[in-house]
Image 1 (cartoon, chains in turn green, red, cyan, brown):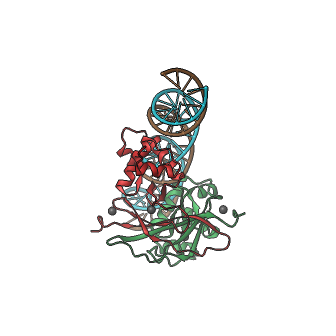
Image 2: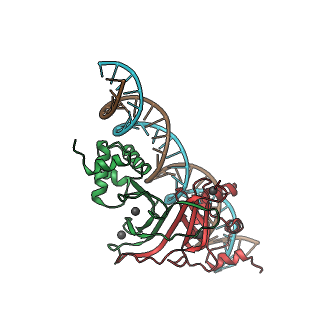
Image 3: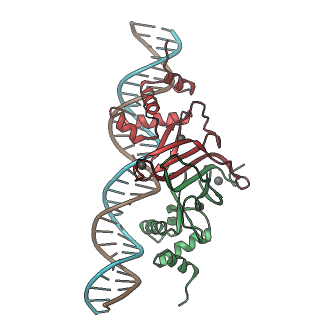
Length: 139
Length: 139
DNA sequence: TGATCTTTGCAATTGAGTTGCATTACAAAT
DNA sequence: ATTTGTAATGCAACTCAATTGCAAAGATCA
Ligand SMILES: [Mn+2]
Ligand SMILES: [Mn+2]
Ligand SMILES: [Zn+2]
Ligand SMILES: [Zn+2]
């Protein structure tokens, strides 16, 4: 009854570790980057788009990944850190979207201020994106 | 040769002050809120969607409005302040998206930190959105 | 095994955003 | 005032990511 680290990770988030989910988690873990549904489609050409879509949705609902809305209009996803609970403001961090290569980057070390919101505004999450040019694209 | 305040505002941004554009600017100025293309469609039932769309695009390109990407997947727009140049980080501020009523709010008084980005990341703009519940929807 | 629930695949749909092109309105020039 | 050119508007069609319905396949448990 050996169990991989990724299998454990899924089970710890109450996600049934199917073969498909294992493969996607593995891919996200080893690329370490922010990905889109299209990225998964390119990688898993044999799998159906809907399955990939629903896998990401499941991951999201169970707090295994966080969602990023950059300026591209395409929804991006990134693996949460081991101990992440996706809570505001502690687990929210800045992302960077390169307008040139359209890549999105996670900056986990760049947190967000504890904003003093106007009366009766109750925050639950945040999406902080800086757009610009990444190192590869900055001439 | 009298000229309204709104007419001047358009001309100061090098936007030809057509009747349509005047009406849309007026609407945005008096509602003082963050709007979407659909909001304009509801208000200006006689006008064509494309015209409204291109009006917003023109406003955006000429720095009269700023664009907000909240978690709704629907692009929102808000009038810039008089002296805004939409520059990062000074003119970038926090927005709030209510998950319940799906309204978006401008918080011009909540600026953003001058983040120390990793080497060679060059910022040009920012989109900072806090999601949660607004006063009307916070029970 | 059989019954039941979950996951996956296929196909179709939604809806925001966008574009091409014809028409109309406007403004300058004659 | 008429002509002429440019910009704005309207209509229709299209793109594309996201989403849903339903059937088939797979897993789980009695
Ligand atoms: Mn991240
Ligand atoms: Mn704003
Ligand atoms: Zn880049
Ligand atoms: Zn609300």
